[in-house]
Length: 219
Image 1 (cartoon, helix red, strand yellow):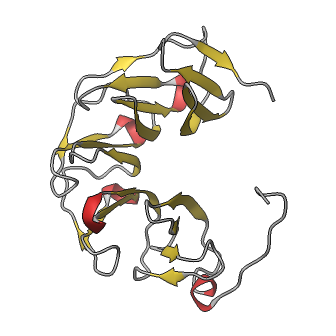
Image 2 (image 1 turned 180 degrees about the vertical axis):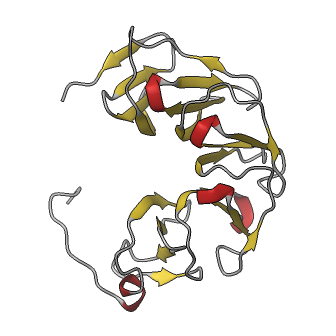
């Protein structure tokens, strides 16, 4: 019913999460729902959330974002600069060595394999092979970056202190001017209609037909 009513779900795998905070929910191209949480928890549901299966061992880490690529490849980023990847839909995982120790908050990877990961203190990584290898890039900001998405041929990143930036190649970024003295943090982005809805303190809508067209969302 589009979220009008909710039912609490308690299963064996959900109980193993204990007091861990859930950090991200995403749906993959096959309709499965993935839940990322603290303490190394990655869970998947094949029945719209009625039951869940845990896919990763417990660890002292929070997983923050997940990307789905063709042929069952999955890439996950998290605290302490950690990256996990799977080539079989999450049955087996391997850790990727990267030149970064700052926590990674979000990633976006194109079907071609080109992608970026962003994180705290402006952390920025680039991949050209679907997340198998990563190279550190010169930060375009020292503010925390909380979300990056790929939309309309561009990567869009948002974060703390009003930061909004765009890039076509993941290396060269252009800051998008917002409202004067805007220091609000924004934590997520959703593509839809003619642009991106940016969530957080003072949410904004970024139109695709003009990067300078920013309007506040009515509450």
